[in-house]
Length: 147
Image 1 (cartoon, one colour):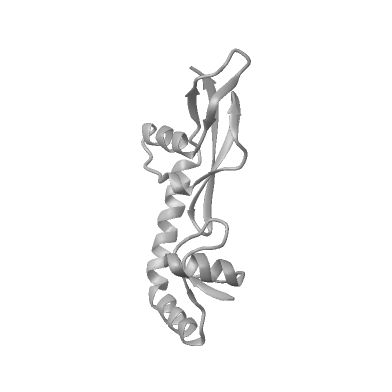
Image 2 (cartoon, one colour):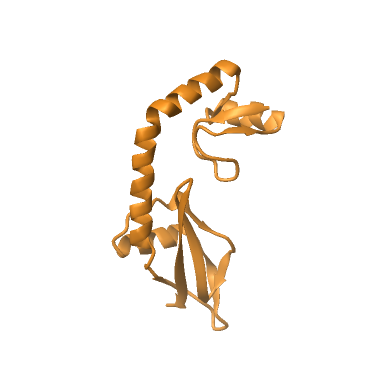
């Protein structure tokens, strides 16, 4: 089943992408939630026209994302966490703590666009990826220390 996404979905694609999904996923989740529409010929033509009209706006958004990525490029974060004597963290460090640390550093980044590949459950150095635009992402190194 081909659908047109109405919003960014992390594992599937970005807004206005035409993607192929299994029928059940499309009919039972994406369509009822309003996250997608069925990609009929008329819907594809409307999408192409809308994208053509929005091309200038999208270029400006991409430039802003690249500027933000340039500002975030040299940032390193230190996040404190409660740990046991062996260096294991009680719980884990998530994108919420990374977003709070970025806010303390003076950057306002939505936690929903911050991705950490592996679970952070011990003290050490890790990397978080911030996807500012579908073509622009920046990696932020952060260190977890014991409080």
